[in-house]
Image 1 (tube, protein in one colour):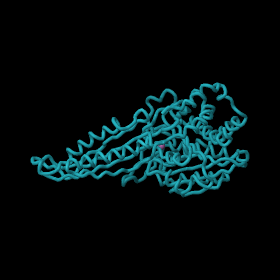
Image 2: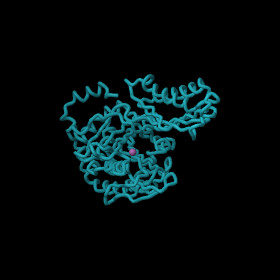
Image 3: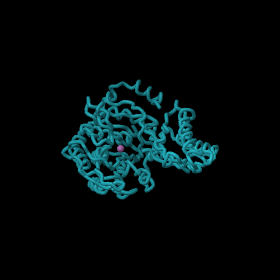
Image 4: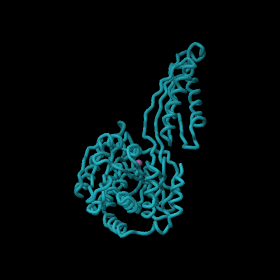
Length: 426
Ligand code: NI
């Protein structure tokens, strides 16, 4: 996807100087952000040093809920697991806008030498593991708390309501869907939602995209049931391995022949092929397991239908049967084009015109996508890699993932200004 022609027209017709202009309100926000910055850094380090795995974020949730309450907000805890929702009612009537931050850490043992390095341990899948905010969600929470603090100071003048959604388990099994089911987007009903993710782009840069941004991620499993026989007498049975090999090959034609790649790319990968236990036995069964990535929710459905049809029909034609099942992951993260177009000037003003750029499609998945299925949403990346270190920077989820704290004020200013500008109808 590319930005709409309309967006490009907007960007080329508005003079650059306009983006750089600061209103008295924007200046006041900047000053307020500077004042809360030491606290934002302290929160980030505290969360970093005390990471918790998905759906175990009880200490984290308490720190968040306590602070939101101290700001005079109505706070709900235990939403969709360990989620926290804070509601800040402005002094004037208006729309309802939500900011979302994820709270969970990963089963990764930190290798970054920081004074606030994590030494936490937990049990994950029956094994003792280190725990680390290796995806940088500590930054997301600190930024959202910073924005909450600045916005609470402006409460009397805010034309509308701000909801702060702190969700569990973004890395899995997912916290957005349970929070939505528990009513996080209702009462008052949210009109728009914003979220960000730190990423190894240059510190303080903002990378955005209108339309599809991040992929859907689904899994499939195909069990082929043939009939066991001697390896030397294949005609005495039905060989599920040969049938499985044909299915692996035919699945490759889905993306190359059936997906409209001019619209959005997709991936179908078989990552595991198992069956049999020795050279001279053709087994009864073989199993294929794989992943599907798509950038269009309709193609996503079509790919699943094709996989099911190809596997079952091919097996049937070969005298076997195939059972196909899918594990549905997160949908495609789709930024609302109108909202993105509308808020882009805010991002440019906050980060600086030269620091905001259009990014590529990203093959990872985000459960922010579920909010966007309910209300218009915009999700963007915030760079946290010091200039000059981008090429060698460790990616998110690495034990060496490092987030430059110099990006924090940009994050707080972005989130605060998105809320203020949105509510002001800008
Ligand atoms: Ni993440």
